[in-house]
Image (cartoon, rainbow, N blue to C red; front, side, top):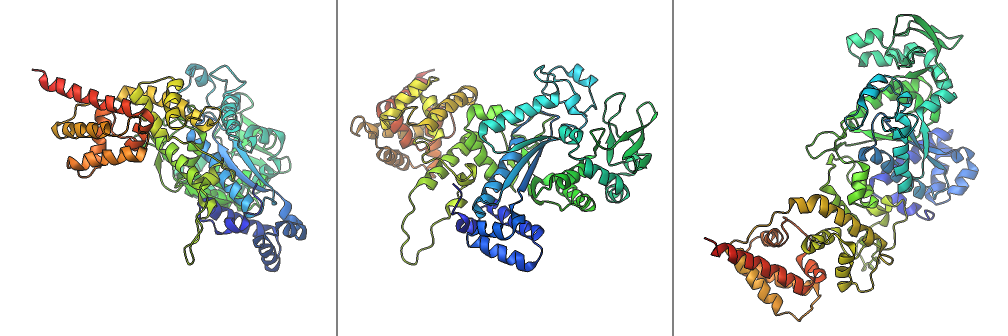
Length: 570
């Protein structure tokens, strides 16, 4: 699937390919011993001879590790999904760049050993959760009563969605990594280099916190809580620390085997070191934390991963989306109203720009995705002599959305047009919508157009929940009424049953211009506000063609009759 794409991948300008090239440079830098070896390996890879490069330099066969983290103390949201979707896009770009010969892994690590500090607003059984406060999330009882712990519940929610979307990833539980001994070697190194870690961390803290700060957070053998306790003594020969437990008792525990966890920035650095992570993205709010964790990683003998800082998602009030607040969209909500592909497309777009994440973005993202898919599947025009080269198909967002394998067809009908069909027909039945669709596409069916069939369902949900409650019809003013009458006359003059969207659109333009609408945007706004009770819609000609010429004329006639009735009322 991804073989033979390296020439295009080397030239692609889309941000996943820029990141992929950075990762390849890192791999060559770290795994080869000299500039001569690096130059030779790079030359072979650039020539598409990746297999030869690997056979010449076996160290290149070691998997390239991509990682992303998930905070298991709250229910997953779409920002969480983005933290998996975006590195997946970079991974696909890297695979194309290296002819899919260099092995890769994507680790999704749940921070489920973190102490449960704050109870989310959007969960039941809060009194029970209060009793479990400060315990590792995997020891907090599940408020939903479905899993052995709240951490397990949230992990299951995350994995179910990622599996449903088809992500290729390996899930790791931080609790299991600590308890199984996977982190033991790096934990002992933190113990050994305790003072060096402290020298990095203490200047980043306030005076009060510095007085008791330790990179180790012991788990109380008595209460099971994760404690912010000072390390009073280190016993390197035994691999233990001594700390005051909650009742003041001096307690000795191993730093291995899940008896302690690390403060989050040392934890991040230790994870990079233990798992040999090559690439991890993070939000713009973590720039300083990444810088600190990079230094700790180096003290522990690791090499910090390549990174990329993305902007944060905001809710409709421009507030940062938070798992604990439960603001913004949930994954289930997006999937009720929009295709997963549209969500991935939204994640792809402008990752360094802050974006609002709320219901109104779904129709726009859906239609933009469909437009890009049409462009991708359109046969490239043969360039004339001296003409610019055709666009690189790998720069099309749908290539990254689908991991290099976009579907061969999209939908013949836009999402916005479906929404307006539902609105005009007042239909909440998919069969009625398919009846309209077959007027223009007589051979279309849910079986032949599976994406369109899904869009029909999304459009009905979106209309029922958002459009219909917000519909606000208004009567036309005098100029608009005259323009509506003119448009109705023009449509009456068309051949009966006309389904030519362009012909109808031309008549709409003509009526608006004749009425003196400038700009014409105001004319189209009047059409949708008067006829459909909303402020915007798709091309009116396309809507009329699929809704039906007779039905469109009846819609206009009813609005004129309503206006006449209003004028006649005392």
